[in-house]
Image (tube, rainbow, N blue to C red; front, side, top):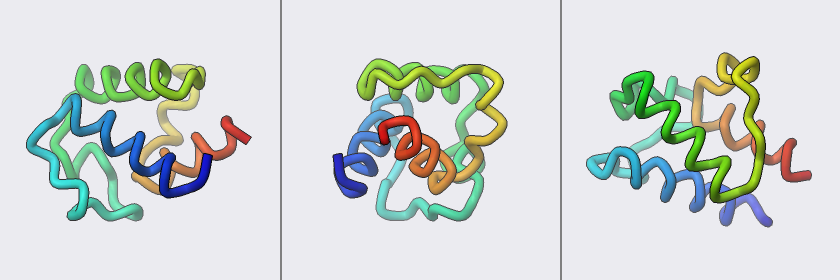
Length: 81
């Protein structure tokens, strides 16, 4: 899977949780939850959605590493190989 495909899946998953999100306005270097105003349940649903779509286990211990969109993409790249 290339970077563009991964980004598309991440953004589709995010938009399924928060349909008001405009993907083109998101920055890779800013806290994602603040950019899209996700509460803790929405964030958890987003991570569960990524798990379901990508078949990648994201342990709770790693949640703190996933702050920005760039963090999420880099983490998933590492997990997917």
